[in-house]
Amino acid sequence: MSDDAPRHRTRMRISYRVFRSVFAAVFYIYFRGRVDGKSRVPRTGRVLLVSNHQSHVDPVATTLALPRERHYVARDTLWNNRLFGRLITHLNAFPIKRGAADVGAIKEILRRLKAECVVVVFPEGTRTADGTVGRFHPGALAVAKKARSMIVPVTVCGAFEAMPRGSILPRPRKIRVAYAEPISAEDVAALDEATISDLVRERIDANLQRLLRGEPPA
Image: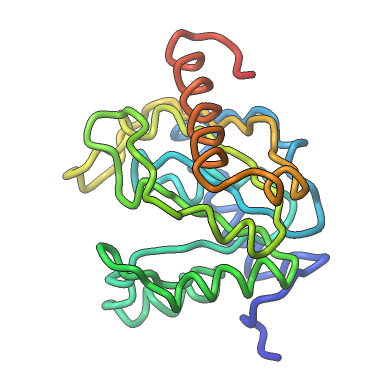
């Protein structure tokens, strides 16, 4: 199995730690980042992190505080630049085709979850145009049922102000990340897909509204 093959690692690779340190400096200093509820994400086992999508900063922001390697679903056009594609592949990203039912990407998410990995998905499918939580794509969380994985809803707040759609460089705005109460693998298995989707979206949006009002997340 190659170094970048999907599998759970009990320890981060040295190269991964280096990139994580660089990203952490930017997040905590430039963006004055803050993370709440990271203890809700287990250190081992399969976990699907489901986040709202405010900006290009989100994949890093949603997982930076976690003490284990993460895996990311990213749009396939990011691999058009060969060097950048190699970099994000090394950081456990894999492509998905936007605007189409990408069966291959779904299978890859399933494969990585079954390998006891943490996988991050953005079920809105694209970045928000106004900072609100958009509609989830139908069936976006069905993979959690197939993988018998727990789901942790994640809220990103402030990234839209830091780097809205159309911007090239991020602005120094405060970014908050909050992990909501997880949905256990047992509950995921028992609930239907529509109920899971509504529940996850409600928890994400509830924390977004709290953070916007300056209140602590739930």
